[in-house]
Length: 359
Image 1 (cartoon, rainbow, N blue to C red):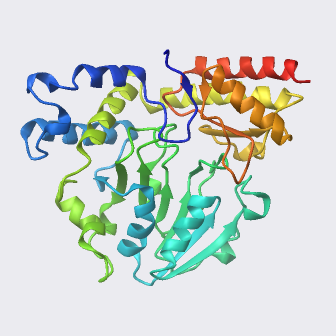
Image 2: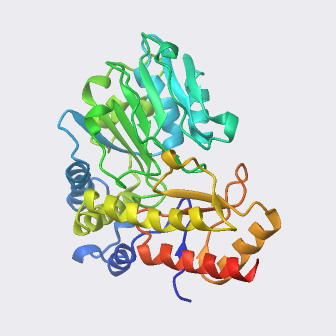
Image 3: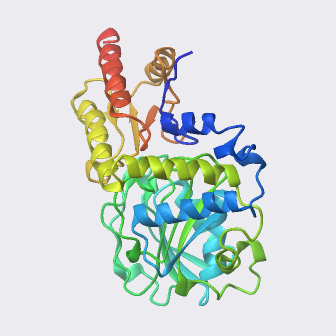
């Protein structure tokens, strides 16, 4: 069977060249006589992989020296607890709730202190990024948390909140490396790998060094950033193979011209799909224009039966995982870095044909 165009929200499509390189090295990595999956994480061969991956992400994201790059486990969901456990001193933080993951992050922080929801877009099914009123901010908050791109609802922050000296913390799971980001504006950035970086199992945390080392007394050893910073991400056995694949993806990003070039491509891809949606008589996007994501594009026909028919026929035609999240309905196309522009154009061509055939 030919490879399909995979529009999954995650785990998502990986670059074919990365998969082919991993295939070549599957049973004998670079003449070692073994697979990366079999390698001791304490070996020189594996150190070359993990430290090479760290050097590449630092280069590609222009990460300043005063930040640690940590390769962790537990998904972004574990970061919902790690952030407050490591940053709470006054026991207060501000959260903007722009989707299910932002809501879960706030709820988890509320187990360890006060999570003040300063704004929410729940009133309109998270279809926009709410405007902020600084009067609602907590003056002595330990940090301010946002979900930078909302996978389910297809919104993104185009202008960061102005939070003064309060550390800004952002979940960038679904848009890491999709566009240039000034790391120095954040205290912590974290991301599950399975959307734009590699396979599920790896979580990346980029943490400003001054925020490390003063965790709450109840913080478990494994949930302390200090533990992983001191162990260079190898306090315990890391997710070795996920890190290896991620290193290959970082090399692919570099070969593509870096994050700035991918940002141009991502804007071009998104424009192809949004332009079609804005001019279609059948399909329409669900997000206000100024807050649209480059990565996740939810859309509907307004007719549930027609939506189901579209998803089924699209799958038959080789466009898979287009069913929308149950809270939005309809469809969602996730067009992460590895989705080629040809895939988006082919989807639009299919949508045009479907529209003509189902008037």
